[in-house]
Length: 348
Image (cartoon, rainbow, N blue to C red; front, side):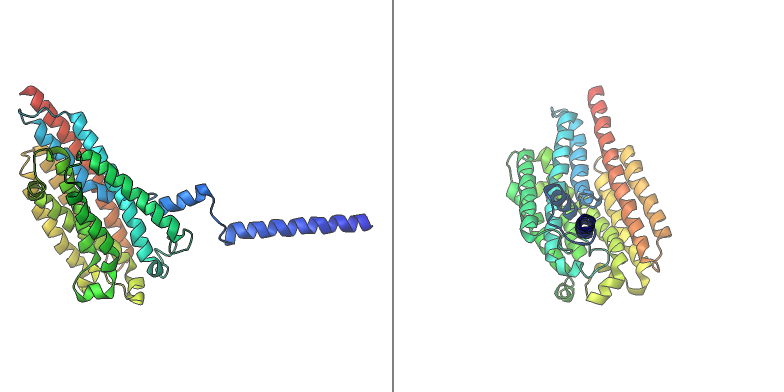
């Protein structure tokens, strides 16, 4: 009898311990293991989503088209392999730099993110990742990105190329504060510049050996302006998803400018994109680019605006995804232009 009682007591104790372990796993916040911590850091940089890829588009487009122009120059001995190599380096550098910027943004916004439905589960806002781990992860990504840029540019004008985008990334989260609104500064302005600037870096990756950074900026201005307004357009639609929560915690965003006529406001934002695009494409004299870039983008904008419903803020997410597809498609279109230019150079 006594033996059975002791056996039952031991069984109950084991059951109680198992219950506690299950509770810790499903409801508690255990100290993350190495694999788990790494995944949280990946999530912190948004590498589990498509968003960081937006930062790679302008640079990769610029590299590929600069390379395509160089291929048809009879005085140049550049090869397509070099063009694609530089495009790959530009892609990786921009992607990692964006990851570092995401960490900085989330650290500055951690208290605000905790109050917004869409962002409350982010690692820093939820307390899953410590500030120390986040900062070390940010610095690692930044250093690797800078080393790639140094290699891509052969060490020439690295500081001049990177300082503007580093400064903009540092300032970006503060553009969401009420003080910024008083100065008529919206976060979309800073974000647009940050994502457009790599176009200059992309040009320099091909022509930087004999072209000054000032000349590269001048050549890329139409593309930079186009990307700037493109990012403002798609990010304004994207951030409109948070309109209810933003009003509660007094966070400012560019969509407030549209007011009750937000749908028409998006139409206005598309206009400078469509105007800047031809100014850039005219330099290449390519029917393929006119069709694959100007034609496809214009048709897509019409479809996006037709399907957007200002009474359903979530529809802004659809615009964001559609423009991501446009970005990927344009990389493919520019790659085709490189191959077409190679064939043209061989023929002549």
